[in-house]
Image (cartoon, rainbow, N blue to C red; front, side, top):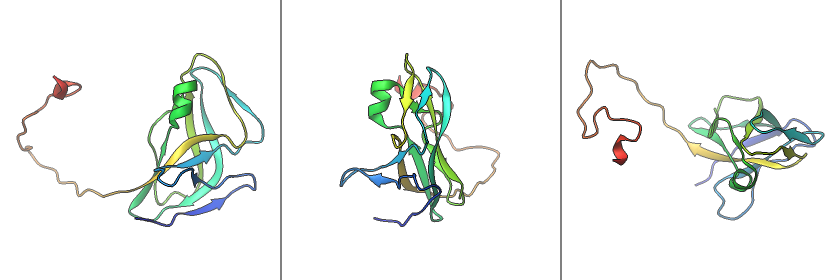
Length: 146
């Protein structure tokens, strides 16, 4: 299954998202910055990518961490997955946090996240006075694993 995503380069230095292997689920998003940024432990930053997207209705962009940098450096996202709605036309920014013990450098062109394109459904919300019974009931936060 394939869908066309239109990409606008906002600066000449921006890299167009690309799959790195034939069966990769996500495309890499790269930092479009003019100089190296240092991210201190527990610091949060919005990393610009220099691109804007036109995602068709019925789809979303999901911004997810890159597993290698998460494991080796503690670099992850603040709100994974971040959602890019189909009607958003602004610059895509990657909201990162350094969970590591030392500062991390982000260099111009570094791959900082993955972009997944996924179908979405819109729910019809119906307010009711009572909900149907279930085996789990109101048990939450770890209840189903016991």
